[in-house]
Every structure is written in structure tokens, then in C-alpha cells.
Amino acid sequence: MKLSKQISQGRFWTEHYGGVFKSRFKVIWTTQRHKPVLKRDIKKRLEELIRKALEDFCLELGRLNIRPSQVEIIFTTTNPYLSVAQIVSSIKRDSSGILMKEFEDQLRERSKLPTLWNMAYLAVPVSEFSKKIGKNFIEAQKGR
Image (cartoon, rainbow, N blue to C red; front, side, top):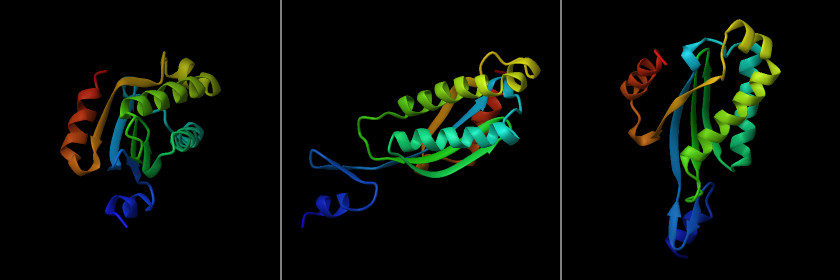
């Protein structure tokens, strides 16, 4: 049996035109103006929305860490045509709309947030990620 066929029969690998594809990314984004609003019910609902979105994209969730003002996800993709930008913008757009509607009094009225997420995000292959990169990104977002 060819090596690519053996690998592609493993979990979460895709064979495409003779190549085998698998990528793992760590993605971080923050709330707008670093408002610490991702707590209790909002945090729980956000986790549900992110898990559902990753499932819809057929992605494997490695880790999900939701802090009061930031989200960190590690996921694996096997689709060579699906970009990280598509995944992240879809998750951010959909979750912001749903959470702003479901928790309007907590997010819009109390926190004065026009939208939930800062526009920026950090997406790095897991093998390239370092705490310094993550820390520098978070620090750069504090004024936004």
C-alpha cells in the first residue's frame, strides 16, 4: 500500500491530487476594547457556537480557551481549500451577531459595545506559535 494511502486512511488526513494535507493552527482574538464580557452564560453560549462552527467546517478541535476578553482555539483542518481567514471570520461574524442579540442588555447597554469582536486576529501554525507571539498580539490589541 502506498504511503499516502496509508496516511490518508488515518484520522483527520486528506489526500488531494497525490498530496496529503493536515494543518493545525492556533488562533487568538479579543473582544472590542478588551472589554471583559466573556463570562458565565455568554462564555458558555460562545463555547457552544464555536464548537458547532468547527463541526460544520469538519474541523477537529484541539483546545478551546475562553477568557473574559479573549478567545484561543487550536484546531486541525484537512481541507486544502478552506482558509483560516474563512474559518475565523465566519466564527467571529456569526457568534457576534448571535451573542449581541441574545445578550443585548449585557453587551450593548452595559458595555456599550457596537460589535463583540476586535477586527484583528492572530493565526499561527501550532508548530510556529510561542508565548511571546501570543503576548505581543494581545498587548497590541489593548488600545483597539
